Length: 123
Image 1 (tube, rainbow, N blue to C red):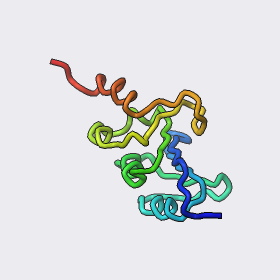
Image 2: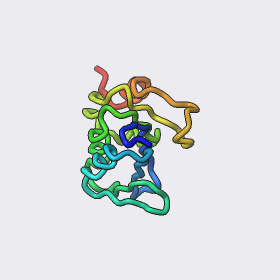
Image 3: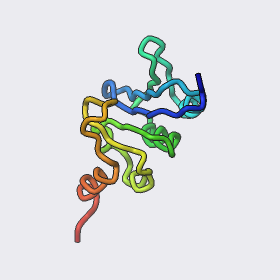
């Protein structure tokens, strides 16, 4: 059993007040998640949660896990600060409601193109 193996970091939303972060057991990822203020470990469901009412929490989570493969619930993509979107790596993919599956995953580049038009002003 290795604690250095990396896994996919999944970011989803449980309800309007709670972000959920989950990943396979890995000491390095645990250290990272604990560096984001406001974390709570849910022993029963085996995931980390964060309040969504804290400014910039989602951005801090994404920055903390930079370089990791991140699957983020599609609903959350629209709430990512546009300046952060521009700096996210190709390792970030958006997923529909069936998050955690390979079905219907889209690259962040595709989503940036799709949502980028809505965020930018045309002249």
